[in-house]
Length: 409
Image 1 (cartoon, rainbow, N blue to C red):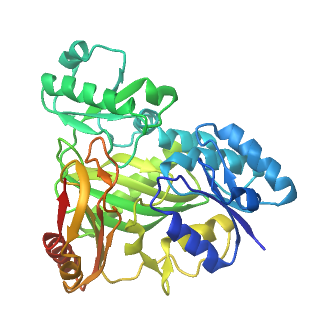
Image 2: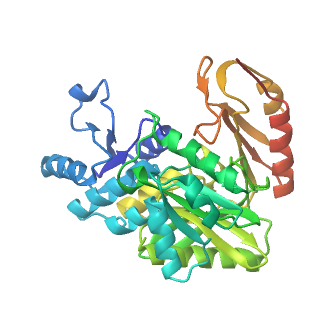
């Protein structure tokens, strides 16, 4: 029986989907997290604690485990585990990205440097030290500028500044965020920020799968809501894209070139791009699949989930089809409107009654402390829709969201 290692941070939304896919495939599943599982002592061969901030040490632990129980594939499910997965795969000689490539995709500054050197269209950028005086740095920048941490994901800590005063304020706000006990940063991520040119235009996301260095575009998502700042909270994803075929081909081409420039060759990728009259601009490319519960919008072949497709690729098993089902689909990540504690959720049944809505999944629990962006990283939940056109999907998502209300104290 094939044995598969899943790297599952305790903060991920993705655990259930990947575990379900592994069970469907009938593999012997090993789950590793950064915190001990209460059942770990009774199942030491299947539940493991790893320090994701030390990839080589984690790889040594897994190599020792694999001596008696061979592991045939390793899959990271979130940004936090991509470099660890590469280190483990290198030690066990498994199918995966090189460590250097995974590290470059994980660090926004390294990514910018690699992509710029390869001629990939990216924003102009500069590194800002956290021990710098932001009032001294601000006059040397061209505005508007986007200031962001090097290693956080999901738009956490990303702030647009249009003036020198706004830059100084954003700098101090991000520095305070990086000092929070629930934020884990190390290396350059704890020493520097990235300041980059704001690129106007429509934002899209590309979901892809790399095989032997070649890119299969699985889906291109439109993001209908403008993402112009000062914060960059993502809400709507709708596929297929309504951009022209030529624009979509250019998006796939730039993404492929970006992956090659970083050295990414195997596994899922999730890319974020801006598209304007000058073409597509690469904002980020991550060596993992789409976050949150958003993968539920994607089905392949005769109903295969994205997670099953990823696991089959990692195991080098046959994949009958990489074609996404043709019916338009979309998701709304329900934003947190204000800080506080969730007291009540109303209108869920009314939202689910909207034609085209498949599910309204409220992932925040009553009593939970809610922290909006840019300090937070979670959502209140997710709304999923399918319809005959992308426009109908978008309307259904907006209608369903309008019927929900949240009491936050």
